[in-house]
Length: 179
Image (cartoon, rainbow, N blue to C red; front, side, top):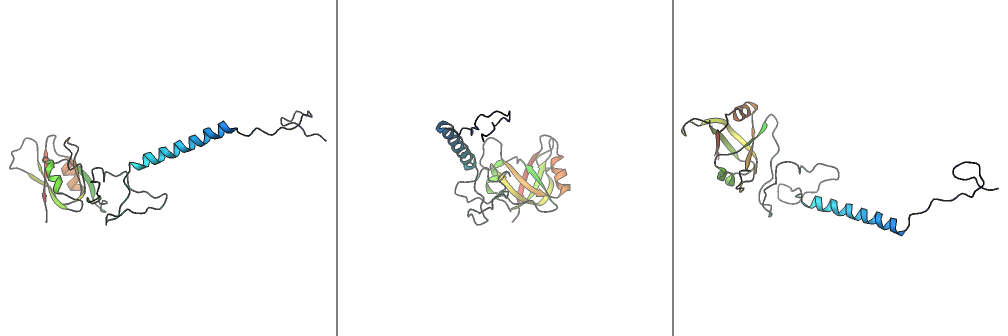
């Protein structure tokens, strides 16, 4: 008995198996796979490996967030001597601050405690106002940048955050480092 054709029209033509991909199609598939793999490697190579508090490379289980999207580690030294950013403590909010004197960022590290002062726009130099006492430094970004992209990330209480972001345009911030 003859097999029916694949299109089910009732004819007695022999059934033909579909063609297997030839050498050129397999070569193209392998090249696409290799190029995709290289793209993943190149894109992942620009990200810093997560580190422990001791400066060693941390092992992160597959599928867990490494925290690479945080502002931390953007301007870190290659030797890893700069500490990583700290997490935001419960009950606090994070505030980015641009200091009037960015050179102060060179001596600040995550974990330091500072008093945040502001000289509101239009006031004399001696009339600084305490905005946040004993603020925790979460991260220092661009401490050596000359283009004004440096910032200090502080953990402050919500009321202190309102006072800091509510300052008029042109106000100048500074910090006093606590011991």
